[in-house]
Image 1: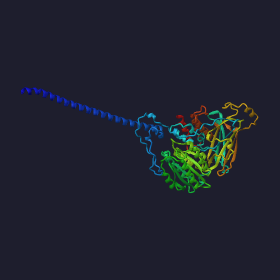
Image 2 (image 1 turned 135 degrees about the horizontal axis):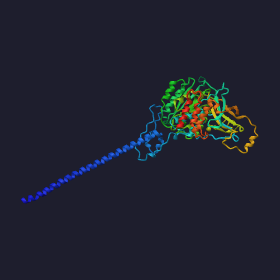
Image 3 (image 1 turned 90 degrees about the vertical axis):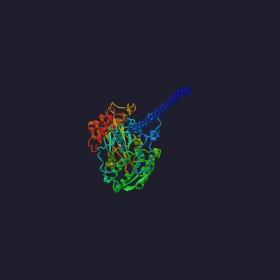
Image 4 (image 1 turned 45 degrees about the horizontal axis):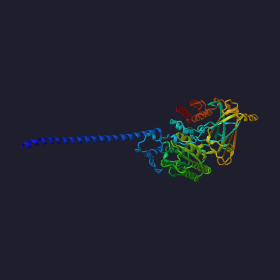
Length: 589
């Protein structure tokens, strides 16, 4: 019995030790498993935090890229469709309508460089514009073009230069630069001769072997108080693309300034267009500032752009309120983003041309940047018997719609064409600076069915030709072998050129003709030319430098700034001083 007990004690002891070992082992396994779980959870949390940081970093990168490169959200939609804002509400008159800030959503991992970015200039539209070539007088002695009083290219270029960007070459139209400034031409004394022609010839500042011929036209001046009664229809773009401080808000302020010049004999109607067109203000007396201002204040941007419906409705209202002896004009204010409705630009032009024949003119005012369609705005104004201006700030709005109201509104001559015949005995070569999209065939000059530009009351128009004299040893084109023998038999005259201007009175269908000969004794050194001549030459030179400096040789921005600075003359509003600053800005870029 005792032996049995003694034998079992070691066994029990071993069992107890084994049990304790099992318990300790199980506890260790549990702790190890818990540590593994904790480590996995920590790794998961770390991964989630890393993903979150990656997403935040991606969003930060995109936002930074937006500020630096003016992201095109349309281009981003191909890679990040979630980043595009929801469709804009169509309630154009609700002041609460505003473009929503896009919210970036997680996207599938991809290299950031795959996102497509476009600069603002890349999405702007300009017509192809190459400088006019040099013409040889013996083969092509006649130059014909329609006058141009549009200034939009200059103010649009000013906007880009002030933003630290050189403009695209096609955005620069030399004639718009030259005609942005007023020149001291004397005006005719009576409206029976609606304008006077002025000429001046001097050495070109960028080439001492060539001369510049300046032809200036000054329209008969009419005081604001004597302007005809106006029937104005504001056609305003309130689409989503207009939701920017330099677009719709500036548009409202600009038109408010214009309406303050009107009286009870004038009328104003407001038509808006976005996804659809509508009448915001029926024809209202011009002195009812409260009603006009209230209608403008309620405008808000939203929706897509349907310019076709808006233009048709605006012309319809203008026709309903037509003033037989007055000013009838549609004023289109937009960034030019016509992307819904009429698909063909040619159809849009045909519509404007057809409405022009009813006696209603079209003025276009451009606003904003990024999607600005300069080409379309200028073409519509040309076809619609109106002017095109670009409003980049409140000072430009005052200049166009207050200071130049008479010339903007009241037409004193229409279908104005200029034809210059150069004398091959005196002039070997010539080149018209600018007016590329205003050139006419020689036979168009005497054809009264061919449309041309209009001249407003008190307006000035200036054109510059660069010419090479026949006795110069620095011609750009070789003389023709057989034509030279013919020229020797011609009677030599002391005339450089013969200028003809054809125009129609505002209500006439048959044109009248003015002529003026330019003698070679008018040629003078640049130092003896007028301040206006030298300043206009500086402006023309600046435009040519921006377009690539094909014909200006070694002339530089510094030379241009010096010439303009010393010939500013009377600069009441500071436009000429501002020009010098623009030249300096361009030189620094």
